[in-house]
Image 1 (tube, rainbow, N blue to C red):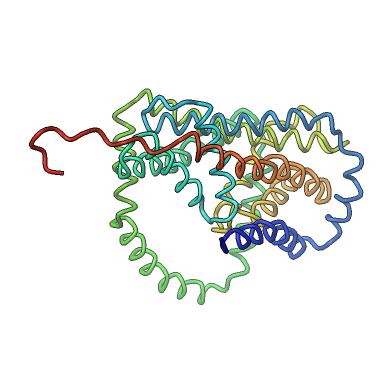
Image 2: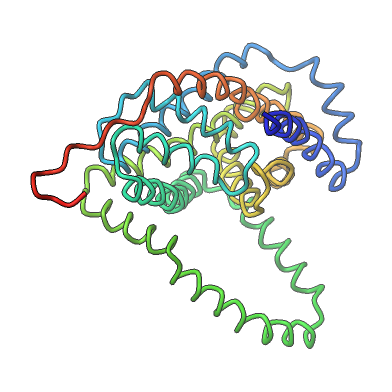
Length: 329
């Protein structure tokens, strides 16, 4: 009983952490600008944002069905994705969603080991799906502002490093990095991922469903961010949707690199910087990002808490099949 207040306190602290990170990076001027400009937001875009947010979870449910290779009920699986999202708000690197989805598959009759392998394959399949989506968007958009900005920042960072200390640091860190990577590849988790991807590749139909649905979940969120920018008067036009989508893909990937619970703070800062790279002013970008995160990130949390209670009554562990005569138990 004592854990619940701690969880609520952590959920309440996450928005504070996001605001602190943005203040540290950009000062309070963009926050003041966003706060004063919220009164001019085109709220008629809000229903479309809500629909895209719900569609994101439906597509996540389809991706889980593909990875598991089971005909899971779509409604219950979608509810599970809301619960997984709520769990992700207090755990880093998507561990909450992994635990919730694994538990759900076990409750649907899948052995624990196989369920863990399927969820691991789902997590890994999202990376190539997002890379393919990013390549397609950049190819269609033919807008190099994002890549040029990233290249400029990287060049400036490299120029600030003194050559001798940088070489010494690389010589010391490279062997340690190689050792850590080798240990990670030999870990049980890496074995589960490899097993899961191998099993998924043996099912081409499920592999196609998993990759397509995983890419679609990212595409839907990118469109939601673009719509959030369009909701700010004068921020962009409908012709800027593809550059805005590319900005989301780059910013979300950068924000997810830090193992913060739900990417709070790092994701907001990365998205603001990505939007700035395509020509959106800092105040406008922050306003759009706050609207986007409020609808797609924070609004599903109470829904996830409610669906968790619903799933407890709707989904119960299915009994294991009886053992054949003479089979040791």
